[in-house]
Image (cartoon, rainbow, N blue to C red; front, side):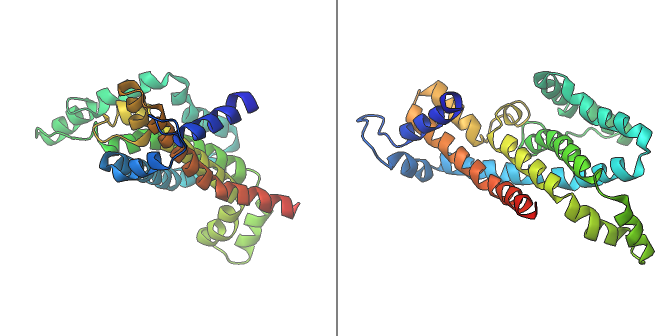
Length: 261
């Protein structure tokens, strides 16, 4: 952990505070980052992308996990989870190129809509922020659903029966029992999804096109283009700070669980 994780992070932190020309300690790298529109915009574009990915993933994953856990019969749950996870057994690159073929203006979706409506239309969806959100949300839904299912499956069914006996409906069952007891899985899944979304390079490149780069793309292009390690290190440390802030809810949850024990 020290050699492969802690040391590289501290080395990156050190680089972010060094002047690329003189090698002296300075905050200029951070000032320069937020003073340039391309860096400033990419930073908030990364946060925006991650926010929408988490939001859509949670909205889709919660009912899906509820359906698998409480609606699907016990003997078919494994099959349902297998169907959920199976698409992610293939190479990510293959999946991304497949979605390019499906979502392009000459792809399967456009062809189907044109056949049904009789009008020639273009989606203008591929190589946009929406395409990046779509690609990362697919992964987020799978991850959060699995963690929510793991939390929901441990809920004592007698609590649900008590809710029904006391005149409660499905809404009160979800609000007062299922949601609070599945909150650990929801928080962990959301944090992990955020970490993946905020630092991902492949999806914004293959589906988003990179015309409006996120921070990970800008960091790599800086290294490949000018080999400015100090500026790239500054971006990397900002990503680390964002991830640490995102992990605060997870750390609070762990602390709460320990206190309860």
